[in-house]
Amino acid sequence: MYLSQYLLFCIVLLLGLGAVIAFSLFVVKPVQTRWAVIRARNIVATGKTPSQWQFRNVYRMLATAHNDLEAAKLWQQLDRMR
Image (cartoon, rainbow, N blue to C red):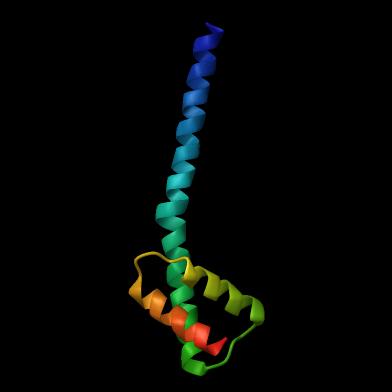
């Protein structure tokens, strides 16, 4: 009886962990990428960086964005500004 409850608990725990990972990959990461693109547009348009930390953060997010041509273009422009 206790073994079946333990197995059920482990299965539910793994499903919950999978849901958290899927949420972070399919919701949080695209939102972060959109935020970085908006910030990079502002940085490129003004030619000034608000802070070194923010520049590095946007630069890193754009560098790790997958299948986003605008992010790649903005990353190259930020790389030239660096």
